[in-house]
Length: 446
Image (cartoon, rainbow, N blue to C red):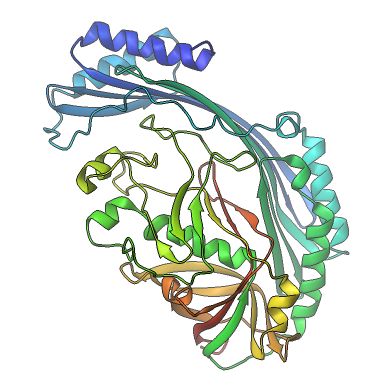
């Protein structure tokens, strides 16, 4: 390992070998540089630059495990980290489920780094914001433009030595018109994909139309969901649907080998294909790969870290999410696009709703993945294949797998749009979907 982060990892391992020669140890070093431009009332009000380097040390000795971290990366900081971590193992409970360290395993990809993100300046981000504000046509706007650069190194006493790097750029903007809101989001590894003009024109046009929204009765409607709404579906699948810990404990909807989804649905976690956002290995040093979770409707896998993999008698898929106990997370879900344009999806609907976005979604039943939430940023009535009257927001209660079950997916859009992750270095990428029904349980009146 030749990078400064690799040197830090090797230095920490050497200190552990001196302090506890019999210990199994792993070191993960992560450096994140983030630049954020925020705007409100159509004016930029904040530029933030943040850089941090953290060292996370895992020590297993005499059947006990301790994990600790520091942002003090000098010699004294590393010595203190090793001293307190090794010392804490004497007080830690016995760790009967210790899975051992990942052996030397090559990476399938090193991460996508784009020079346009590394070179982006506050002026570059401001230019995207300016394009958005101008294209919104005088409406009040707010949002952010963000660029991020991650580099990392991992080393353990079993001989695993790996490094990676990745970039991301994302934009989230909203326009308001007399209390009516419209928003658009996008994420990419490339700065050039943030088209402020196109996003601004879209939200401006929609916000103007939404001021005449009418109330419709609650009930089940055929829907066309735009990528922002599909992004919420993918986010909740990541948290609750394909989590190997929850699957081991019988708390997941997933039944491996069963056709739980329509054949039009193919879903993978993919942080390693060139152009995708994501880290090439997890915090346990397991290399990531393309993990197909649903293949033409059949549930084929759930995500595992090393501990959950041992319990499931399988291998880790590289989805360790930390010691918080939540379990393995799929941070880079990609729903494969189909062949229908958005106009074609809409033309097939006799009477239904076009839904821009979901928010404030909460799980009611994790085993069925039944959620409740609200629509936002634009709902329109579709009649005889044409977009008509804008509609006021609904509350819904819906099982997400049931909405995507065999026979219920009537069309899949041809363009998958990555949505920014609210945490970590990830994204939720999916096309528009035409679904047979969505259960709206309340309207603006209650």
